[in-house]
Image 1: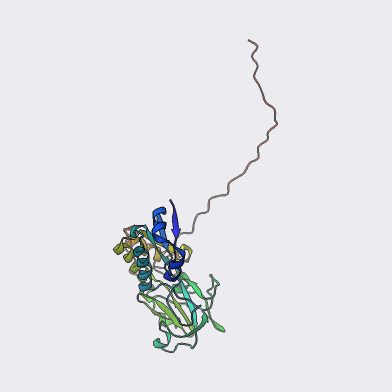
Image 2: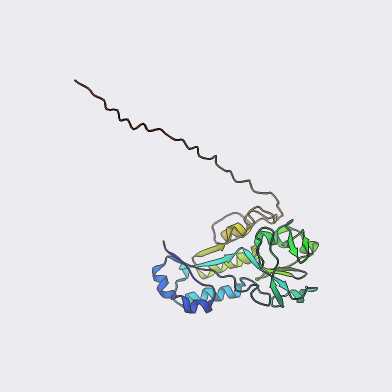
Length: 265
C-alpha cells in the first residue's frame, strides 16, 4: 500500500500538492490537521481547532480526493505560550490574547512551546512557571473528578480546549474534542484517523480515567471498541510491560572436516 502525508495548511497545499493526481496513485492520504497556531505567533491559539480542521479536510475533497482515502491527523500534544501579561481573569486568558513567546517546557518533553497530553492532564508533574515550579498540573475536571481551580490552573473545555495559570497558556485536545473529530470522520466518510503521537497519550493513566484515553475515545467513536468510556475516576495503573528474556547466543565450532561414509560392499 502507498500512503502520502499531505499538508494541513491550505496556503502550503496550493503550491505543493496536486491532490487529484496523488489520489489516483495512493491508497490513502493523511492530513496533519494540527499546528495551525503556536508560539511562533504573538497571540494565543489552539493547535487544531475543529473549524480549521474541517476547512482543511474539505479543501482536499474539493480538489478531487475521495473522502474515503483521506485520513484525519489528530494531535496528542498542546501548543503552549507565555502570555504577555499574567492572566488575572478569564477574559485575559482567552484565545487571541497577546503572548510573548513559547510556554515553558514540560518535565518529560523538555521542549518550550509544547506539552504532551499526559503532561497537561495529569497530577503530580512539575511545570516551570517562570522562577518557580508548580507541582500540580492542569487537571481536566471533566475526567479526573478534581477541579483545576484547586490547583490554580483553570481549564476551559469546548471544541478548542485550553488551560492557563498566571502567564502560562496551552491549547490542546482532550477526550471530548478528539471524540468530536472522530465524529467528523464518521459523518464525512473519511478513511480513518492518524495520531501524533501515541507516546503523548496518557498511557500510564496519570489522569485517573483509563490508559490511552484519547486513543480509546477515538476507537470507540469509530466503532473499533465496544466498551464504554469510564464515567468515574479510576487511578489504577496499567500492568507493566513484560520484557522477554534476552536471546542466548551460542557459538558453534566448525572443524572443517567432512565425514564420508565408505561401504566397500
